[in-house]
Image (tube, helix red, strand yellow):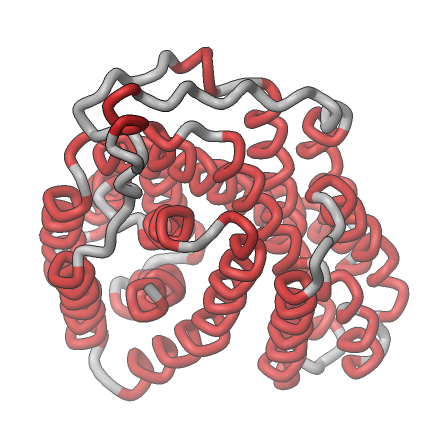
Length: 381
């Protein structure tokens, strides 16, 4: 899953650079294609999760892998209009590596160790973001865009083939079979689960807004060359927080972590005069980044019935991608019409606004667990 996520961290920056430098279009045109891919991923994640629940892993991964490979291999040979037209369906066919990894962990890891497993998974995501974008930029600047985008398609297809070949289990033997009765949507998409998804979307709003405000601050003070170091320190802080969250026997709940994530970033802009001070004051909010995301996954896996776990994990993916898609323009607008310092405030306050409904209803009782099917009970799991 680490390998499967690597090309996903490259595709945005590679598509942007290709459209701007290779096709001679502006950043707005590149953003339109990127938004189409992101929206497609958000719409496709629950659908792919439902297909996992119904048809199993291999058929879905095979179709997604072929579709994604075809898109990226063909992308450097398509005009801009065609790229913009196929961006949405291409995003919908992306292999949902994130939700798939969480499904496998929910199946294979004992309940008492899930926090540590989800924290490790979140740490793995941070590692891919430290490697993927830099590797993609190095490739497209030293090699031809056509070769780089085609190689990205091959990487997507290769990792999909490895997942198909390995075929990790996404359902425990004691859980309902794929052809068993599917619970109705209203019985499991409860307000508690929806509030968890809102908090997840708010967290990603904060994270993407923080990165954008950090970049704008460094650029405004002529320290753009220190961007890589500052972002690397942010990722390391998040990894350290994830290690602590996974190691302790009892961690902070998701709602408290979300509050800390948002509130700690609001005053960061006051320290933007020097890059090293900005880097230091960004450490506290990034310490709770990985724990917040891991706690979200743990809550979703605990609430969602096993029969619809794939769809629930897909909804989590969709909520985080929508938070990402909303954060960039909102925080960018705040920066354009005020200053980079206000970008940090907009990131924190905006994330709180999105998560407010979920934060106000954390005391909603969890739904009763589904009864164990008679045949499964008789077979002893």
